Length: 465
Image (tube, rainbow, N blue to C red; front, side):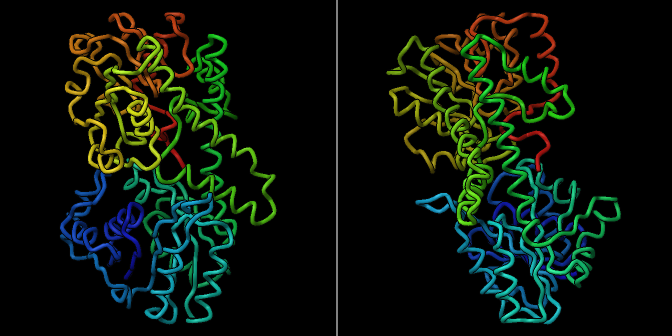
């Protein structure tokens, strides 16, 4: 099937490449010439594990190409709209200008029977409006809404092996359903669930999932605040309540909280849209979810100040991690980068490191000192802060690192380190929601065994909708 994908940012580039992998003939379209040139040469303009190899493979087959011209969409049977919906500059609502502009530019190139498929995350009601606009200009074309559920770091797998397919349709018996079934024939043959619903419900599926996940993350971070006030251990608390099948353990690691280009702006846009619909009281709890999430960043700065003896002025701080989550170079609304900048503003000399995100961080905060080397970052440091749970940081040797720093003090912003190992090596270990002194050693041993299973933190490396 011939497919066009309009918008080749994170979502669009991954989707276009994966559709070509499934055997479709795909053209990805974007107004950014540099982005199109990079993708055409087999280089994604962002870090996503496995994507560059898949790009090279699918470009080599001839089934995938990229263009800056919207006219390249002509002749495709399906047109995926995958452009960004950022938060408006001065308010919480979503900026839909790219969505509307893309559809308007596409309309002249639609043919009878074509299906426009929205993948962007939009406020409820957007699809209905776009459907009316398409019907006015091309009555024989149809609109479907097919929200994405990608996790950065796992996006290729999530596209090729989705945990569910959601179709938002004007008529569940329409030809659009049959065409989408053809697009996703492999996933359906593998037994992936397919859910048919109206436009409004499909739009709400995505934002509701993000709101729920954000709420779960902020809940455990609220419990971390209580634990800090009482001397309790939030990790032990999370283990205990996570055994309840109604709650589950995933997304119950306290830490710096969520960031990136989705959860923060999506819950704010959800609140704004609810207000427009007169249902603002239904989502007032999300304001506190957002507030708890932001407070974690300030608390991290406080912990850094504490281990530095009460003042950050002139202290050398090593920040390990800048991306909002591991396996990503995304620093949009990154808690890690925010903390690094706050430390610098409060008088610390910050050296920041990340395996992938240094170039993006430099563009946002050029005044920080950056390095991709952990050894360089921690040299003569008065405190080390782990702010993104990259596997490389989780497996650091505390004995070796101790030989490089000026003061062996570490603040674990993701609760991803083994506190027993670090304290036994002579480090002052602090973490969000954990007691100052060592907790029960037997419990710590149990926790240490869990670290080998991989992080399940607010950075969203666990399975996520």
